[in-house]
Structures are given as structure tokens and as C-alpha cells.
Length: 449
Image (tube, rainbow, N blue to C red):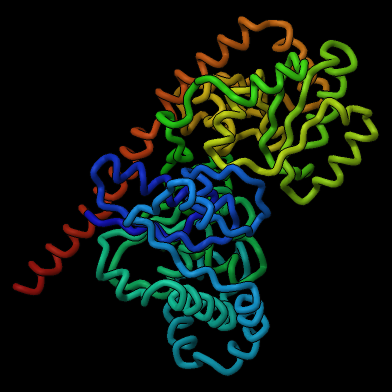
């Protein structure tokens, strides 16, 4: 079985491929994202510096001993000028190019899209034209899609990449991997929204990693979805000593809180945790330290609130940390804060739990009943008052912190392990290829009659 993973947002494609190969599956991945958090080096290389969102990482990673595995298929990262030129030329290309192909593809896809008209309007020819041009740009940076299909048995496409096998694929089934991309994008009044919605419906299987998008899946009329947790390798994320903790204790810090989540007040509730931490400093732990990362659309807004609350000396700002250093940061902390609005979690909570750290986050148990047989031992909090109460209690009770950390690690091993992720992926592939094999056998038998 040969499986190609296409796309690498948050390194999910790279991590899934690595875990599948550990289990003996012949998998490869195209990593074509440019953001540092979606570069394979960010996950596994030693990177000692500070980095901007689109800084190159390859050279420094190589200097520190990282070698790209042969199953990692980098797509050339076009420079910003090339990307900008492609976007500027897009309207002209749509008006002048691909008229016959667009008409043919629109005629093929429009009947398939019909059940989605009530969700997001009609599928336009322009939607298909823009999708085809973006697919051509993907091919230009990788390989002809027909060649990819000839080389693999199954394609697994991440984020908005399922649009490419929808438009270009013919020979192989594809799996669509949802990681936050089903919440809003399929309902956008855009070419991307309509084509992604259709690509989910036409996928052989849709992997859902965010339990709270079940309502969106039903709104799209999907019956081909299955839950698989975000890939987290608990053999790598595990308890251990921390250099950062030793440095902070030498500075006189007596309680460390880490929030790796991006600053997005409307999604993550960043303001809520800042107000809660300020109350903790004022009432219980004047030497506590909150470690934050400089990423997200509202960093400056958070900085302004920190100044208003008068807790600047209790906050340490860091650039986003490559994962090997983030593991050390998890181990350095007494409590990890995640997000306080969505009621579910991505990678931060299971990574922290795998490192034996207690997690405070908004958690809606009812949303998770369909995918986790056992509730994770996170502390549910949403309002500043609830977050403060959780922090104040945990700051005063080292035994409770240790208990939550131990139980969190055990929960990850039972319900979020790399083996579970691999088993669910292979079950999907076996089902798809088994169905496909039976269909081919049936067609062959019919042709002989």
C-alpha cells in the first residue's frame, strides 16, 4: 500500500506520514506550505534561534544535524514576487484561459454539487476556472497530478488541498483531512468554499480531527466521515527535566503558566486568561510568570491589556518555539492554558498532557461524546473568574497538579496515542482499497459475461 499525503498545515501531513511509516506503511508527504509552523524542520530539527513567520529554516536545521527523510517531498517555495504575480494575473487568466476545460469540468461537477445549492448557492463556471488555475499552480510546484495518481494507491489531502483531487483526480480515491477547515471555509461565498464543500462530499472518506464540526458535517450532508485525533507522538512528547524551568527558578519565579495558543480574542479568548492571571498575581502568587508567544493577529491588543492590568513584569514574551524547545517549555510549566471559547482542543492540550502537565481550557463534554469514550482530565474553564479559580486552586496544590498531569498522560496513551492514530488511518485505507478492489472485480466479471 502506497499513500501520498498532500499538504502540511501545522505539520499534520508530515507527522501522520512519519507515524504511518513507523508502522510499516509506505507513505510519503508533499510539504508545500511556507509558514514556519507548517515546516517539517519545525517539528523535528534543532533550531536555536528566533524566527519570523516565513523565515527559511532549512540551512540552520542542516547545520544542526537535521536530514530531511527521503519520504518528505518538498515542493519548491516560490518567492513572494512570484506568488503575488500569480494572484494579480488570476482574473486575466480566468477570463482568457481554460474555457473548454472549465466548461467540461463544470458540466461534470454541477450535478454533484446540486445538493449543496441550499448551503452555499450555485456552483459557477468561474469557481471551477479559478480552482483549475490554482490546481495548475500546485502541479507546477510539484508534479503532474496524473503522475502522482500512478505512483500511489490512496491520496490524503489536507486543509483545502482536497480541491485538487476533486478537479484533477480520476484514478485513485482520496481522503480529505479536516483540521479546523470545516468550521467556516465550506460555507464561504467563494470558489474555495464551494469547491471544498464538494470535495468533502466526493471524498472516499473525510477525517475529522475537531469534534465540534459534527454539525457542519451534517449541514454538508456528509455520511463519509470518521474521527481521528490530531497526530501527537507521545514517545516524543513526554515528561522530563527542563532547562527553562531551572533558569526561571534561578530568577525567583515560583509558579509558571504557559499559553502557547495564538492571540485571537474571538477564537482563543486571550483576554480572558490575561485577566485571570492578573488576579492570580494580585491575590495569591505575586512571583508567578506567564509565558506567551508572539503570534496571532492580536498580539498588540494583548500587550496593551497587559500594560493596563499592570502585570508586565510577570509576563515573558517568546517567539514561537520549534517543537523540541516547546517540549522543554511544557516540562517547565506548572499549568498549561489553551483556549477558552471553542469548547474543544487541537494539538496543544494533548501535547501538554503527554508531557505530564495539567491543562486548563474550555471543554464541552457533550461535543466529545461521539469520539472519546472517556473524558480527558482537563480543567474546564471559560470566564476570567473560572480561569482564576482553576489557577488559584492548582497553584496551592502541587499534589493535584501532579495527579492531573499523570492522569492526562495516561489518557493520551489510551485515547490519543500514535498507535491509535495509525490504526484508524490504516482501517480507512483498508476499507477504501477493499471497496475499490471489489468494484474492479465486479466490473471485470460483468465485462466477461
